[in-house]
Length: 164
Ligand SMILES: [Fe+2]
Image (tube, rainbow, N blue to C red; front, top):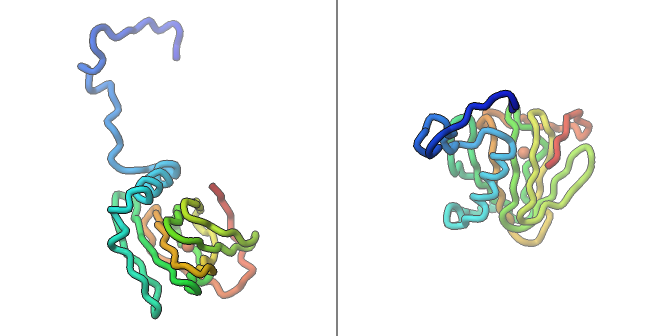
């Protein structure tokens, strides 16, 4: 703010639409992607009826796409896991919406209960498993959309880690 600037708006600012930022239709920042995931998670009518559990293969469903991002719904029966992988050039937000998942990284293991969120940068390597006795459901926002998910066989992967 320049204190020498004595420009003032006279009258009703709402009548000057070009001065107002239109509400953003799509998220564009990490915080907005995390917020999008939280708002979808809280609105079960958007996704609960879509969830399937499949004992023979991992179930996933693309819930939404937007410019530069995708939202996926995943289900995890007890014992099901992702294998160790990264997300290619995508960063992402993982949000647990039901049950508990366990995330393994080179830095250790953490339990992610319902409501937990993990934000990760491109190149982040992890393995997600349902070690619990109850099924779990998670919501994943990828930015940009997930184009590859390279699998890692070595447990000793170097990768940057971002936590939220
Ligand atoms: Fe992942």
